[in-house]
Structure formats: structure tokens, C-alpha cells
Length: 456
Image (cartoon, rainbow, N blue to C red; front, side, top):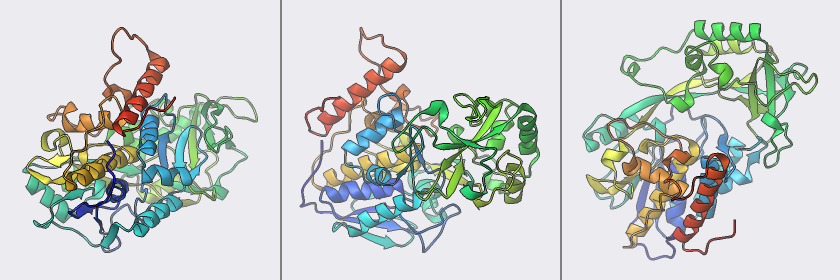
């Protein structure tokens, strides 16, 4: 159900100007609500942010697959577009060639989100740190993401009466394009896949033979790593964003079947398939910066330069940004939140984004989209129905607000395993099943939005 119109009474306070907070602010404001968006940068910085722009991408510049019929995150992209997402509009306006993925110029993307919210008449942006929520806020959304400031994190811990769960998230290095040796590397997308704005040659590929690969793995294992503080030693990694050296420690071939897999690639000059490959993806619109795909790391900076320059084609690499590691905090959403993302113990407060236990840029923004709609409807004295669980939005929401086991809850990316199965006698499998789930999702989304389903 789409909420529109003016006349909403209570101001909605949103804490955090990342993807989730920005999307929540946009959705609430376009529904007619008055919004105050509180962002602590530049008053207080973080270990990972480099600018004071809203929706800054601190890790990869990819929003992952944009295939709406064969990939759950691509389906989520399409649902968000249809729901008027600011994050997807900015991403589409600043996309870069990346095969079938939706990668963006991170600076142009952030600037577009910041400009849109700064110019919206219903939005006020306040640059200040919020250490605790004032008791007179009648409607609030906490969307502070993986880098919640310590004071607010402690406020949340006390409010929820339990220890916050947390894990480490790692950042991949970015390389200056001119420093890559293209006499060694070549341009090719996996399986020559052509995505929006691409030509089937969207990635730089640096090949390794077996000897080079094994020496590289040994270097990763022996390299000096970032030391953890005492209170961080029990914090686990998120499986979907493991540091490259942690993957290497799981077995000598782990990387070759992960981010360094050579399938779908062959040197366009020789036709030879490498034993392993390091891929780099365009990181800005000028094409001057490229990030090392899947190479998030906790290696110390000096070690990163030394080890990554052993990769063929990167011997003289100049790094615009080296990798890093930061602690990510999230609440036990299935235990603490209701189906409208409200804190059960304090219904005037909602949570959105990664702090709810979703993982990924798109998933974070999606939960922000829902939180903004729910808050705006409630301020109007109405009830915004949750999207059906047959949609990507609804499946993700259902997972974090009751579908997951609270005792074993861990961060989750959107995936087709979260969707209700097709009704009998449907026995569709593989790609056909994904397509069928996607068609059903988009049709059900249109009903939720109050529109007649579009022809697919």
C-alpha cells in the first residue's frame, strides 16, 4: 500500500545518514512526513568513512547482480525501483560498466543522494551526534549501520536489555588504473557477459599460474595482520565478506574456488585459461580507480602493498585506498522487533539497515525503505501493510522479524531460500524456478503498491 499526501503530524527523527537512513528519509518525506535526518559526520568521523556525504559507500562500489529474474538481489533492485527508491535512482544515474552487476561511481552516487535530500522541502539534515534518543521524540528510526558510535551503541544495549551481537566487516583495496600492467592483464567479463553500459569486457583480469598462486596464498597466510583489541577477540566474521587471508587459511584451493576462480575467463590474446585470477572492477566514472574484487583484508597496510604487488599485472600498483577492517554491530531483530520494525519495548522507535541484521548495501536500503513507509503511515494514523513474503522486500522483512531463529540469528543477504515455495503442483527447478518466483514477486509487489500488475 503506498502512502501519499500531506497532513502528517509528528516529525520523524532518523538517526544515521547511510543508505538505510537516507532511503527511510526519502520514503517518509515523499509521503508527506516532516523528517529530521541526524548524521554525525563530519562532527564525528568513523574508522571507515572518508567524506561527510550521505549514503557513502565505504566498502565495495557494487550493489551486486542487477538481474531481476535470476538473482534475488537483482529482484530486490527492481522492487525498490518500483517503490520509488532514492538509492536505486541514484545508482542507476551513476552506474559503471560491471558485467551483470550494478556498480556505481561512489562519489557521484553519494552526491546525488545528498543533493536530493538536502533539496527536499520535508527534510531537514542536522549534522550532530545523537548519543541517546530524547524521550519527547514521538517517532524515530535508528539507522546507524555497522559503525554505530559507542555512546549510542551503549544506549541501544541498555534499551534492549541484552548484549549487542557484532562481527567484523572488511574493506577491499582500490588501485589506480594507470598503474596496472595491461601487457599482463586483460579486459573481460566472466563468460563475456554484457551488462548495462558494458561491452563484455568490464573487468581487469590478472592471471596467476599454479606456482604463482600457491606462493601468493603462502604470502597471505604469513603476512602481518591487524591486531584486535581485547574486547574484539570474540567477534566473528560475516561469511559473505570474509577477509581474503581468512579464506586462504581454510585451504589452499579455497580462493581458487572463490574470488580468484578462473571459470568463464580466458586470456583474450592467447586463449589460455589461467590457474587463478584476480579481478578488478571499475570504481569511479572516470575509470581511473579500480577495486580488487573480493579482496577485503585485515593485512597491515605495508603488507598489503608488498603482497598484492606480487600479483601479475600489479607489480607497480599504486593504491588509492588500502583495505581495512571495522566492527559491525547489529541487534537480535527476531527477538526485539515487531513486523513493522518497531522495538517491542518502545514502539515509537524503529530500526533500519544493517543494524537489524541484514547484510549488504541493497538489503540495508530496502529495510530503510520499509521503515520510512511504516513510520509515515503511522504518523498519519494509518497502518501500512507489510509487503507480502512472496516479494523480495517482504521475504527479507519476514526473515528478520520472525522468520529467523533468535537463538542462532546471524546477518543475512537476500536469497531465494527466504521466499515461500511455489504452490503445488509446481515442481519447477533451477533457473526456471527463480524466474517463476521473480514473476510472482513482481506481480504481488504491484498489488501491494496499489497498482495493476504490469506485463512482465
